[in-house]
Image (cartoon, rainbow, N blue to C red):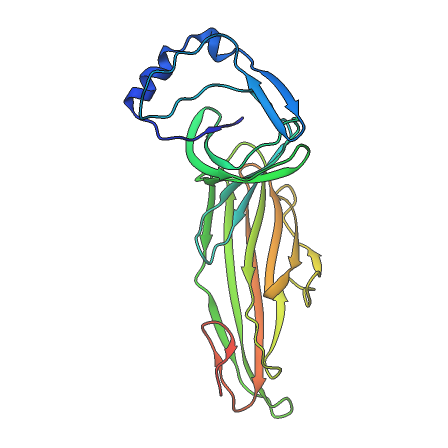
Length: 265
């Protein structure tokens, strides 16, 4: 269960004020009236507003948004970690306003985040931070130079990157794993993806082979050389994604073995 509440500055005085609110009042619903573009809430009962420099909180409404999907984003070349994301549909009739919120999952406070505006029946996304239950290791990239052939008169190199992922949770995990091949404006540099096979241009997709019982997945070619694996990884299982590509340039030019770019002027 994901909990969201407005995030304000909190100190000891505010904590004491919050604890003094009766249990009945905390669960009392407000009366909501719509006036065109304006929504008014009438809080039942009386309120005594004591002068103070700290913010006060009053419950206007409790929204039970049942349409929630969780997935993980992994960009291993930036950080070997799996970041949990929530995609939530606003199934209530209330427009959610942009603001700072405190987040909790299963009663555990995670921190605060910025929530966007969201109209009824629209979706919004929230990042819930890194999940240590999804293990990620990014291997050091390897490079194998290719010598120029007499007929082809080209030089190049084969680059290989791999990412190992293990799901230690007792439920299946949906993963989006992102990597990228280099692009160049020079027509003399040719980059060809070897693994995953079948990715040549934007929009191409191919099945990502996985061991039986491990899960299932797809690999898709995106914009600017982006390669994305969409994987459903079963509990306790592990998988390795491999990105392998070759970069070729005419003989006499040079390829930067750190990223596969033609560095010859």
